[in-house]
Length: 324
Image (cartoon, rainbow, N blue to C red):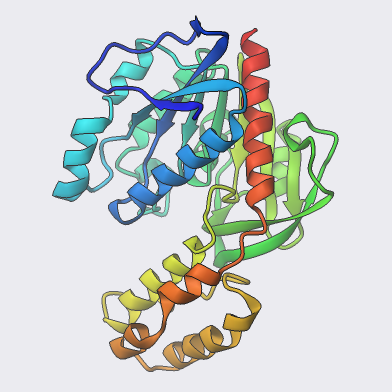
Protein backbone atom coordinates (compact mmCIF):
# COMPACT_ATOMS: atom_id res chain seq x y z
CA UNK A 1 0.00 0.00 0.00
CA UNK A 2 1.48 3.35 -1.05
CA UNK A 3 -1.12 5.73 0.35
CA UNK A 4 -1.12 6.92 3.94
CA UNK A 5 -3.66 9.13 5.71
CA UNK A 6 -2.18 11.87 7.85
CA UNK A 7 -3.33 11.95 11.46
CA UNK A 8 -5.44 15.09 11.87
CA UNK A 9 -4.37 15.37 15.52
CA UNK A 10 -0.63 14.91 14.91
CA UNK A 11 1.98 17.34 13.58
CA UNK A 12 1.97 17.61 9.78
CA UNK A 13 4.14 15.29 7.72
CA UNK A 14 7.06 16.76 5.88
CA UNK A 15 6.81 16.35 2.11
CA UNK A 16 10.54 16.28 1.63
CA UNK A 17 11.39 13.19 3.62
CA UNK A 18 12.62 9.82 2.41
CA UNK A 19 12.36 6.49 4.18
CA UNK A 20 13.79 3.17 2.96
CA UNK A 21 14.19 4.63 -0.51
CA UNK A 22 10.55 5.66 -0.80
CA UNK A 23 9.69 9.13 -2.09
CA UNK A 24 6.92 11.00 -0.31
CA UNK A 25 4.39 13.41 -1.74
CA UNK A 26 1.84 15.20 0.38
CA UNK A 27 -1.60 15.65 -1.11
CA UNK A 28 -4.33 17.81 0.40
CA UNK A 29 -7.85 16.51 -0.31
CA UNK A 30 -10.57 19.12 0.25
CA UNK A 31 -13.86 17.22 0.29
CA UNK A 32 -16.80 19.58 -0.22
CA UNK A 33 -19.44 17.02 -1.16
CA UNK A 34 -22.70 16.91 0.81
CA UNK A 35 -23.26 14.25 3.47
CA UNK A 36 -24.97 11.78 1.12
CA UNK A 37 -21.88 11.57 -1.10
CA UNK A 38 -19.18 12.56 1.39
CA UNK A 39 -17.88 9.09 2.29
CA UNK A 40 -18.15 7.72 -1.25
CA UNK A 41 -16.29 10.71 -2.69
CA UNK A 42 -13.47 10.33 -0.18
CA UNK A 43 -13.22 6.62 -0.92
CA UNK A 44 -13.14 7.18 -4.68
CA UNK A 45 -10.33 9.74 -4.57
CA UNK A 46 -8.26 7.77 -2.06
CA UNK A 47 -8.66 4.61 -4.13
CA UNK A 48 -7.46 6.40 -7.27
CA UNK A 49 -4.51 7.98 -5.51
CA UNK A 50 -3.53 4.63 -4.04
CA UNK A 51 -3.78 2.69 -7.30
CA UNK A 52 -2.00 5.42 -9.28
CA UNK A 53 0.85 6.19 -6.89
CA UNK A 54 3.25 3.50 -8.11
CA UNK A 55 6.61 3.77 -6.31
CA UNK A 56 5.59 7.02 -4.63
CA UNK A 57 4.21 7.11 -1.12
CA UNK A 58 1.41 9.66 -0.99
CA UNK A 59 0.49 11.15 2.38
CA UNK A 60 -3.05 12.50 2.23
CA UNK A 61 -4.30 15.25 4.52
CA UNK A 62 -8.06 15.72 4.51
CA UNK A 63 -9.93 19.00 4.79
CA UNK A 64 -13.39 20.40 4.16
CA UNK A 65 -14.90 23.87 4.09
CA UNK A 66 -17.31 25.56 6.44
CA UNK A 67 -20.64 26.41 4.86
CA UNK A 68 -21.49 22.96 3.49
CA UNK A 69 -24.50 21.82 5.58
CA UNK A 70 -23.58 18.84 7.78
CA UNK A 71 -25.60 16.38 9.80
CA UNK A 72 -24.29 15.25 13.20
CA UNK A 73 -22.77 11.96 11.96
CA UNK A 74 -20.66 13.52 9.19
CA UNK A 75 -19.79 16.50 11.39
CA UNK A 76 -18.44 14.15 14.06
CA UNK A 77 -16.37 12.25 11.54
CA UNK A 78 -14.93 15.48 10.18
CA UNK A 79 -14.00 16.62 13.69
CA UNK A 80 -12.17 13.32 14.32
CA UNK A 81 -10.42 12.72 11.00
CA UNK A 82 -10.19 16.01 9.10
CA UNK A 83 -7.86 18.92 9.74
CA UNK A 84 -8.89 22.56 9.91
CA UNK A 85 -8.62 24.26 6.53
CA UNK A 86 -6.43 26.95 8.09
CA UNK A 87 -3.76 24.30 8.73
CA UNK A 88 -3.11 23.95 5.01
CA UNK A 89 -1.60 27.44 4.92
CA UNK A 90 0.93 26.55 7.62
CA UNK A 91 2.43 23.59 5.73
CA UNK A 92 1.70 23.70 1.98
CA UNK A 93 1.21 20.30 0.34
CA UNK A 94 2.91 19.19 -2.85
CA UNK A 95 -0.45 18.86 -4.57
CA UNK A 96 -4.07 19.73 -3.90
CA UNK A 97 -7.39 18.15 -4.90
CA UNK A 98 -10.62 20.08 -4.39
CA UNK A 99 -13.73 18.03 -5.08
CA UNK A 100 -16.91 19.33 -6.60
CA UNK A 101 -19.88 20.27 -4.47
CA UNK A 102 -23.64 20.32 -4.74
CA UNK A 103 -24.47 23.71 -6.29
CA UNK A 104 -27.01 25.55 -4.17
CA UNK A 105 -26.91 29.04 -5.66
CA UNK A 106 -27.21 30.29 -9.24
CA UNK A 107 -24.06 32.37 -8.86
CA UNK A 108 -20.92 30.71 -7.54
CA UNK A 109 -20.03 33.77 -5.50
CA UNK A 110 -23.21 33.27 -3.46
CA UNK A 111 -22.28 29.78 -2.27
CA UNK A 112 -21.85 29.73 1.53
CA UNK A 113 -18.22 28.54 1.28
CA UNK A 114 -17.21 30.93 -1.52
CA UNK A 115 -14.89 33.12 0.58
CA UNK A 116 -12.94 30.08 1.81
CA UNK A 117 -12.73 28.61 -1.69
CA UNK A 118 -11.60 31.87 -3.28
CA UNK A 119 -8.96 32.41 -0.60
CA UNK A 120 -7.61 28.88 -1.07
CA UNK A 121 -7.42 29.24 -4.86
CA UNK A 122 -5.64 32.60 -4.67
CA UNK A 123 -3.13 31.23 -2.15
CA UNK A 124 -2.51 27.90 -3.87
CA UNK A 125 -1.45 29.37 -7.20
CA UNK A 126 1.94 30.29 -5.68
CA UNK A 127 2.27 27.80 -2.83
CA UNK A 128 1.22 24.40 -4.26
CA UNK A 129 2.99 22.49 -7.01
CA UNK A 130 -0.19 21.29 -8.70
CA UNK A 131 -3.94 21.60 -8.24
CA UNK A 132 -6.57 19.19 -9.56
CA UNK A 133 -10.01 20.79 -9.36
CA UNK A 134 -13.25 18.93 -10.00
CA UNK A 135 -16.46 20.26 -11.54
CA UNK A 136 -17.74 23.19 -9.42
CA UNK A 137 -14.21 23.84 -8.12
CA UNK A 138 -12.91 23.95 -11.68
CA UNK A 139 -15.59 26.51 -12.55
CA UNK A 140 -14.61 28.48 -9.45
CA UNK A 141 -10.97 28.60 -10.61
CA UNK A 142 -12.04 29.97 -13.99
CA UNK A 143 -14.00 32.67 -12.18
CA UNK A 144 -11.12 33.57 -9.83
CA UNK A 145 -8.21 33.37 -12.28
CA UNK A 146 -9.82 34.38 -15.56
CA UNK A 147 -13.14 36.10 -14.73
CA UNK A 148 -14.90 33.45 -16.84
CA UNK A 149 -18.39 32.64 -15.61
CA UNK A 150 -20.06 29.25 -15.84
CA UNK A 151 -23.35 28.98 -17.74
CA UNK A 152 -26.44 26.98 -16.86
CA UNK A 153 -27.14 24.11 -19.26
CA UNK A 154 -30.67 23.68 -20.66
CA UNK A 155 -30.69 20.15 -19.23
CA UNK A 156 -28.41 18.17 -16.97
CA UNK A 157 -25.31 16.68 -18.58
CA UNK A 158 -25.29 13.23 -17.01
CA UNK A 159 -24.06 9.87 -18.25
CA UNK A 160 -21.05 8.14 -19.75
CA UNK A 161 -19.88 9.80 -22.97
CA UNK A 162 -17.29 9.15 -25.63
CA UNK A 163 -14.37 11.59 -25.51
CA UNK A 164 -11.53 12.61 -27.79
CA UNK A 165 -8.03 12.70 -26.29
CA UNK A 166 -5.16 14.99 -27.26
CA UNK A 167 -2.53 12.29 -26.84
CA UNK A 168 0.49 14.59 -27.01
CA UNK A 169 -0.11 16.04 -23.54
CA UNK A 170 1.73 14.66 -20.51
CA UNK A 171 -1.55 14.12 -18.63
CA UNK A 172 -2.85 11.85 -21.41
CA UNK A 173 0.27 9.70 -21.87
CA UNK A 174 -0.75 6.10 -22.48
CA UNK A 175 -4.34 6.94 -23.47
CA UNK A 176 -6.23 5.75 -26.51
CA UNK A 177 -7.42 8.50 -28.83
CA UNK A 178 -11.04 7.78 -27.84
CA UNK A 179 -12.16 7.04 -24.28
CA UNK A 180 -15.33 6.96 -22.18
CA UNK A 181 -15.83 9.27 -19.21
CA UNK A 182 -18.73 10.05 -16.83
CA UNK A 183 -20.21 13.54 -16.50
CA UNK A 184 -22.80 14.83 -14.05
CA UNK A 185 -23.45 18.58 -13.90
CA UNK A 186 -25.90 21.39 -14.50
CA UNK A 187 -23.29 23.98 -15.51
CA UNK A 188 -20.47 24.37 -17.98
CA UNK A 189 -17.95 26.82 -19.38
CA UNK A 190 -17.66 27.03 -23.19
CA UNK A 191 -14.51 25.39 -24.48
CA UNK A 192 -13.56 28.36 -26.63
CA UNK A 193 -13.29 30.54 -23.51
CA UNK A 194 -10.69 28.20 -22.04
CA UNK A 195 -8.72 28.11 -25.28
CA UNK A 196 -8.69 31.92 -25.39
CA UNK A 197 -7.41 31.98 -21.80
CA UNK A 198 -4.44 29.77 -22.71
CA UNK A 199 -5.60 26.40 -21.42
CA UNK A 200 -4.57 23.17 -23.14
CA UNK A 201 -7.71 21.13 -23.81
CA UNK A 202 -6.64 17.57 -23.03
CA UNK A 203 -9.95 15.66 -23.22
CA UNK A 204 -13.15 16.87 -24.90
CA UNK A 205 -16.20 15.91 -26.96
CA UNK A 206 -18.85 17.62 -29.06
CA UNK A 207 -21.50 16.36 -26.63
CA UNK A 208 -19.98 17.39 -23.27
CA UNK A 209 -17.52 20.10 -24.24
CA UNK A 210 -14.14 20.00 -22.52
CA UNK A 211 -13.53 17.38 -19.83
CA UNK A 212 -9.91 18.05 -18.82
CA UNK A 213 -7.93 21.24 -19.33
CA UNK A 214 -4.57 22.39 -17.98
CA UNK A 215 -2.43 25.51 -17.72
CA UNK A 216 0.35 26.97 -15.63
CA UNK A 217 -1.10 29.36 -13.03
CA UNK A 218 1.54 31.26 -11.14
CA UNK A 219 4.03 28.59 -10.04
CA UNK A 220 1.30 25.93 -10.00
CA UNK A 221 0.24 23.34 -12.57
CA UNK A 222 -3.52 23.83 -12.81
CA UNK A 223 -5.63 20.82 -13.88
CA UNK A 224 -9.35 21.42 -14.37
CA UNK A 225 -11.64 18.40 -14.61
CA UNK A 226 -15.26 18.83 -15.72
CA UNK A 227 -15.87 15.09 -15.96
CA UNK A 228 -15.72 12.54 -13.14
CA UNK A 229 -12.96 9.95 -13.65
CA UNK A 230 -13.17 9.21 -9.91
CA UNK A 231 -16.71 7.78 -10.18
CA UNK A 232 -17.24 4.10 -9.52
CA UNK A 233 -19.55 2.01 -11.79
CA UNK A 234 -22.76 2.69 -9.86
CA UNK A 235 -22.23 6.39 -9.05
CA UNK A 236 -24.52 7.68 -11.78
CA UNK A 237 -27.23 5.14 -10.95
CA UNK A 238 -27.09 6.16 -7.27
CA UNK A 239 -27.49 9.79 -8.28
CA UNK A 240 -30.49 8.90 -10.39
CA UNK A 241 -32.06 6.92 -7.55
CA UNK A 242 -31.58 9.87 -5.18
CA UNK A 243 -33.22 12.34 -7.57
CA UNK A 244 -36.03 9.95 -8.52
CA UNK A 245 -36.78 9.22 -4.85
CA UNK A 246 -37.01 12.92 -4.09
CA UNK A 247 -39.38 13.36 -7.01
CA UNK A 248 -41.76 10.48 -6.26
CA UNK A 249 -41.79 11.44 -2.56
CA UNK A 250 -42.76 15.03 -3.50
CA UNK A 251 -39.60 16.42 -1.91
CA UNK A 252 -38.85 18.20 -5.20
CA UNK A 253 -40.81 18.89 -8.37
CA UNK A 254 -37.88 18.85 -10.79
CA UNK A 255 -38.03 15.77 -13.01
CA UNK A 256 -35.06 13.41 -12.62
CA UNK A 257 -32.70 13.02 -15.58
CA UNK A 258 -31.75 9.49 -16.60
CA UNK A 259 -27.95 9.28 -17.06
CA UNK A 260 -26.83 8.11 -20.49
CA UNK A 261 -25.29 4.60 -20.48
CA UNK A 262 -25.26 4.37 -16.66
CA UNK A 263 -26.02 0.63 -16.54
CA UNK A 264 -25.21 -2.46 -18.58
CA UNK A 265 -26.97 -2.91 -21.91
CA UNK A 266 -29.02 -5.80 -20.48
CA UNK A 267 -30.46 -3.52 -17.77
CA UNK A 268 -31.06 -0.38 -19.82
CA UNK A 269 -34.50 -1.20 -21.22
CA UNK A 270 -36.05 -1.88 -17.81
CA UNK A 271 -34.46 1.22 -16.25
CA UNK A 272 -35.63 3.34 -19.18
CA UNK A 273 -39.15 1.96 -18.73
CA UNK A 274 -39.09 2.86 -15.03
CA UNK A 275 -37.90 6.37 -15.85
CA UNK A 276 -40.63 7.01 -18.41
CA UNK A 277 -43.27 5.78 -16.00
CA UNK A 278 -42.02 8.25 -13.39
CA UNK A 279 -41.73 11.29 -15.66
CA UNK A 280 -45.16 10.66 -17.17
CA UNK A 281 -46.71 11.31 -13.80
CA UNK A 282 -46.46 8.16 -11.70
CA UNK A 283 -45.07 9.71 -8.53
CA UNK A 284 -45.35 6.50 -6.56
CA UNK A 285 -42.61 5.53 -4.07
CA UNK A 286 -43.27 1.85 -4.74
CA UNK A 287 -41.67 2.24 -8.19
CA UNK A 288 -38.33 3.02 -6.56
CA UNK A 289 -38.78 0.42 -3.81
CA UNK A 290 -39.51 -2.35 -6.32
CA UNK A 291 -36.66 -1.64 -8.73
CA UNK A 292 -33.47 -3.68 -7.98
CA UNK A 293 -31.04 -0.74 -7.85
CA UNK A 294 -28.36 -2.58 -5.87
CA UNK A 295 -28.39 -5.58 -8.17
CA UNK A 296 -28.33 -3.46 -11.33
CA UNK A 297 -25.61 -1.21 -9.91
CA UNK A 298 -23.50 -4.28 -9.21
CA UNK A 299 -23.59 -5.15 -12.92
CA UNK A 300 -22.81 -1.65 -14.18
CA UNK A 301 -19.70 -1.52 -16.41
CA UNK A 302 -16.57 0.49 -15.58
CA UNK A 303 -14.95 1.29 -18.94
CA UNK A 304 -13.18 4.43 -17.68
CA UNK A 305 -11.35 2.71 -14.79
CA UNK A 306 -8.01 2.16 -16.57
CA UNK A 307 -8.14 5.67 -18.01
CA UNK A 308 -8.74 7.17 -14.55
CA UNK A 309 -5.82 5.27 -13.01
CA UNK A 310 -3.52 6.29 -15.87
CA UNK A 311 -4.65 9.92 -15.64
CA UNK A 312 -3.95 10.11 -11.91
CA UNK A 313 -0.63 8.29 -12.34
CA UNK A 314 0.39 10.85 -14.98
CA UNK A 315 -0.65 13.68 -12.68
CA UNK A 316 1.25 12.33 -9.65
CA UNK A 317 4.30 11.70 -11.83
CA UNK A 318 4.25 15.32 -13.02
CA UNK A 319 3.99 16.51 -9.40
CA UNK A 320 6.94 14.34 -8.37
CA UNK A 321 9.07 15.52 -11.30
CA UNK A 322 8.26 19.14 -10.58
CA UNK A 323 9.33 18.76 -6.94
CA UNK A 324 12.65 17.21 -7.94
